Length: 570
Image (cartoon, rainbow, N blue to C red; front, side, top):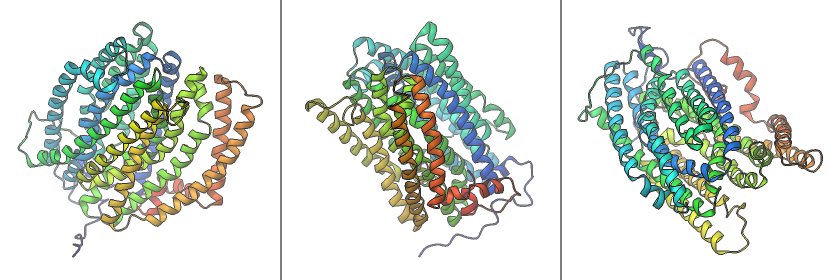
């Protein structure tokens, strides 16, 4: 027999006995107006971040391109980045926010800050231990695992870069906890400013440090950015009256609950790291520029992915966790469906755009035709990966909101096996069959296909499991959104392809930056216009409601989120 949740009071409005100045009142699930405002704040912040990041990309592409130096930097960043993802982002998103938000929603502020202190202190110790281990073992890790195809000089440089980047391992996990604390209070402004300041620090390193220090300047810029990411969030802790205690509390049931949730997430992150290490291992054998090309492809794809997928997941996760805590199953299902449909409507045409005008867009960054071809071979695959990775952001958080980290772990294990098999098989075919181009899907595109397979397998399995667990995930509306968005995207693709082909064979025959900028600009504007026309013709609900959404966002404080209002968030 299914147990019916006990009725709860309106989760949006705090009980009358709660002090209006009590910081815990900010942790209630978002209503429509606050969801709209918060999502817009996050998207604008992420857009600013990506604009700054674009400046880095232009300068880095011009100075280092797909060179050996860039190869070593991409390889050196893999382990530090994955440690940060492991104990920083993973701990916050999976284990800390649901419990911290739950304590705040139960008006247990003292318990919430006690838990935050225990997690902070524990993460600091783990960061120091892991950083020290990698510092000592860096030469072995690079030579045997990350880049066996590197020369001795490249291995040495990779080790030196990795040791600089390990400084960020001591900073980012703690900064991620600050983000979790602020998100738990439904405060998003400072957490959104944090990556902007990180990118500004990195941009400073790219502009100033790379002159005297070369590629090492990028590593020191990353360290500066990490310090800024940490510092900008500190004022928010004062606003919400954060209380730190020098305690570990390893016997505390709440901290142990965090650890129980975190261990499967750590293992799942470790499995995803295996995917990335396998990609690096194989790409290092393809020759100079292959690792860099993969890294550039991911960075280009990350721009729309962050603006759409990460932004939406960033905003709704605290509310998903709070609604789960309050037992509001129906409201949680509506919010999930809204988020998935929004992401699909944004990412499907964006992914198609990466494929259609990716080549001229890449020419803006890489004037060397061979470098441009190499990067575009990866960008084409990433255009498809964009859709799966962005939806994956929300689907995984649906499990984490239920405090279920074991299911994503099992799914990750299956996906890792599939990914490694695809990468290795592709490389063996490329290495043993004559005539296969490095610029094709079995060349530099092979590791990228493995990356895509990882998200395809995970997303497919988790969606099926979630549907069975929730009985209903509003699948019919999601399918409708996919079908209509694909139709509108197909309508968009025809004129974009024809016009770009005409431009490439007439007034913009060259491969320089001006030609690339003109073709990409014309294609982007044309694509946007024709997608909107297609969305109206094929009745894509989420686009058709946009004017009404924005009017509601400026309206009065509204009731708990409904499916229609939630879509209007963006």
